[in-house]
Amino acid sequence: MMRSILLQIDDITVKKARILREFSIKATSEFNRLWDERDFCTTFMDFHRKTFAKSKERTGFNVQVYACLERAVWRSKGKTKGVTVKFNVPRNCKTFSTKSFDFVELGIYPRNRIAVPIKKNRNWQRYSDLLKSGWICKTYGLTSNLEIVAYLSKEEVELAPKKNVMGIDFNAKRIAVSVLSDKGKVLYQDYFGMNIWIKRKKIMRRRSLMQRSNNLSALRRLKTRERNFVNTNLGQIIKEITDLALQFDADIAIEDLKRFKPKVKRFNKIVMRMPFFKFKEILASRCFDKNITLNIVDAWHTSKFCSHCGAVGKGHSSANYALFRCKKCGVVVNSDRNASKNIALKCLLERKHITNHKIFQISNRSGLVNAHKVMSDEVGLLDVAVQHAYQPDGKPTGFSRG
Image 1: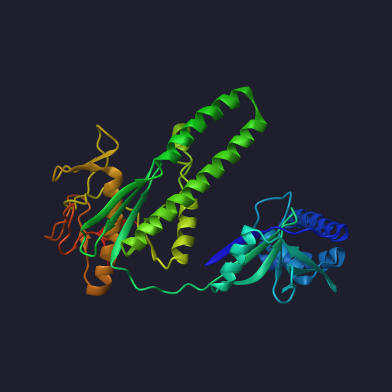
Image 2 (image 1 turned 60 degrees about the vertical axis):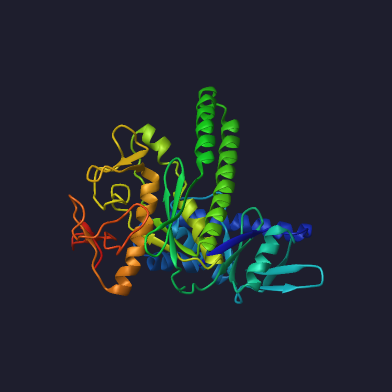
C-alpha cells in the first residue's frame, strides 16, 4: 500500500528559498526539454542513452535526481508547468531532528545538500503517526510550490475472512449498502451519498448560467468548491461505511467497474461525473488502516441478477428505472438495493467455492441451473452464480466459478 502526504516547509532563509526555487525552475525546464527529445525513442533505454550524458553535464543535477526526471518524462503525456522532483533515502536524502524542528535534507546537486525545516501542523502529525504505526518513507519529493511530499509504503498482510460481507453498489445518485451474513441473511441495508447528487445537480445548473456569461474566474472557483465538497463528503461516507463493517464484523465487496467511454452530452453529465475511482481509492486506504479486507468482484449482471430467485433478466423496470422487476418470480425491489445484495452474494459464493470446492452456475437466459434458490432475506446453500467464466477469447459464457 502506498500513500503520500504533503508537508509544508517552515520559515527558511532567503538564500535557501532562492536556491530551491531556482532548482525547481531548472528541473521544470529540463523536463520540458527532455519531452522534446523523447521523439523517435521506442524504449526507455533508448531515451536514456540519448539524453543522459549531455543532460547530466548541462544541468549538474545528482544522478538520482536526473533519473527521476527521465522516468517522469517517459510516463508523462506532455509538457508541464511544474514538476515534483523525487529524492531517495539514504542516497540522496535524509531526515534528522533537533529540539525544535524536524528536517528533510535534500541533495539537489553533488556535494550540495539543503536542510529544509518542516512545519508541525496536522499533516506533519499525521505523517508522524503513520511512521509510528509501521509505515516507511523511503522517498521525498520537492514540488514546484516548494512543498515536501512524503511517499510512504507499508506491506499488505493477508487477513482472515470476516464472518459477514458488506456489498456496495455505487451509482450516479447514491451508494447502496447491504450487509449479509455468511448464510446470506440480510443484516443491514442503507443508502449514502444522496446529498452529493443533489448538490452537484445544483452546481451543474449554476455552471451552465456562468458559461453563458463566460465568467472564467467564477467557473474555476466553482470547480474547486465542487471538488472539495465531493472529497469531504466521500471521506465522511467512507468513514460511516467502514465503521458499519467493523460493527457487523464484515468484509467489504465492490464492483470492478471500468471507465465509461464518453457518449452523448446528457450521459456524460450524469454518469461520467461519478467519483467512483476517487471513492475506491479512499475506501482501499481506509480499509487498509482498519484491517478490513476489500474484495473486488466482477460487475457482470449485478444489476440484472434477481437476488430472490437467481434469474437473469433485463434489470431495471421499464416503468420505473429505480425498481428492479423480475419476470420469473415477480418480485419488485429497489434496483440499487438488489445490486448491492448481488455484490455481497458474489463475494460470499467465492468463499464457498474456495472452501467447498464446488462450481456454482446460472443459466445465461432463464436462471438457475441447479435446484437451490436464493431468498430475499436468507440463502440456504448459496449454490448460485458467483462470477462469469471466460473463454480463451475473453467472452463471457455465463455465470460460473471454476
